[in-house]
Amino acid sequence: MSEVINKLTGRAVVHLVDDIDTDRITPARFLKCVTFDGLGDTLFYDERFDADGGAKEHPLNDERYTGASVLVSGRNFGCGSSREHAPQALYRAGFRVVLAENFAEIFFGNSVTLGLVCLRMKRQDLESIQGLVEVSPQSEICVNLEAREIVVGDQRFSVEIPEVAREAFLSGQFDPLSVLLEGAAQARRTYEG
Image (tube, rainbow, N blue to C red; front, top):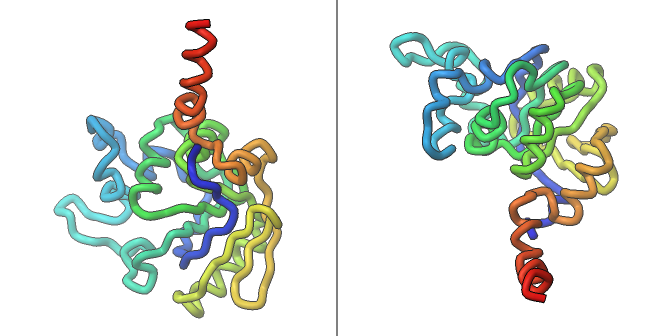
């Protein structure tokens, strides 16, 4: 069984943009990897760096948000191709939570199996969090899956997550491989039976 995920706390970086597709999250030329190690360095690469590798102006390049583990974005996050590399890049860059208006279905499913928590929020709440983070980049974002809420300072925000994903996180059964391996002994007994 994977670890139970109920409460997560971290600082946020805001990239409140709509229709961020998986090719923007990690460009196709980085998909040739044998393992997912190092994919965190490719996160939003073409938006963050020029052709010579020089840093562009981008929230992920802003030192105030270094070490953020919560990404705040817009509508239709993770759309486009169904590549697993996109949530892997986010996870390997240190993100554990993505807040957005909604998510592409396959991206969401790939994220759940990693333990990357994707929560839906109203646009006005995302904009409120954006304002709080811009004023105080060190603000802690406290996610409580059991209560379905986020706390930032003295403000509380409701979040939505499909119940099956919420239960998987709360029970620690979000990684299908771990669940399968847990049942290996029982499967062996049944087979030998």
